[in-house]
Length: 202
Ligand SMILES: Nc1ncnc2c1ncn2[C@@H]1O[C@H](COP(=O)(O)OP(=O)(O)O)[C@@H](O)[C@H]1O
Ligand SMILES: [Mg+2]
Image (cartoon, rainbow, N blue to C red; front, side, top):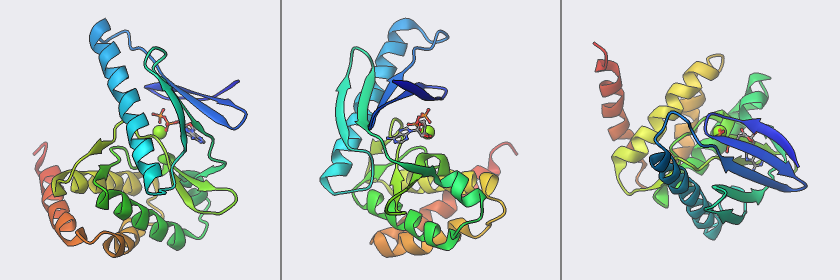
């Protein structure tokens, strides 16, 4: 078993074709709040992965989860992070399209990712298709507002990470409109969210 990543919230181990994601305890949080938060996120991530699989959404297959270890076991998705692929400047139009189409599908099923960045998307080494990971902040919601905020965070993250491809978000939204029948409402809402973002701190 090898440790392959350690983020702010979790340690990721790889064991053969399996990924084990273990949520770390945070010493600055009160013990029982910390436990319940980690438990909540672990369960949420497992639940969302299960739901995604029901409609064949490209995300890791969930194998098991444990409340005690605060861990989930899922399939390893072979490939590179979209972030690294895009920073090399490869075929970005196709990935923008794929990204938008996938997010549209997810939103149509009322799943909000909660942390849409190109580090949480893997380009599958066999199919070249995008797979989404990291659903610990995901939620189920029908609200345009929640979907718009999901897109807003993506827009901001793309602008800071992929400033050399400034049309990425716009291109992704073209595909989003095709795959989500309610895209018009969500994108209208996005304009409000952007205004709010701009007024903040003034
Ligand atoms: N199922 C998976 N298949 C392949 N790599 C994964 C998988 N899950 C996580 N990783 C790798 O581990 C990193 C961190 O996992 P992630 O779920 O995004 O946790 P964090 O909350 O720390 O960002 C990812 O960026 C990716 O490189
Ligand atoms: Mg992540």
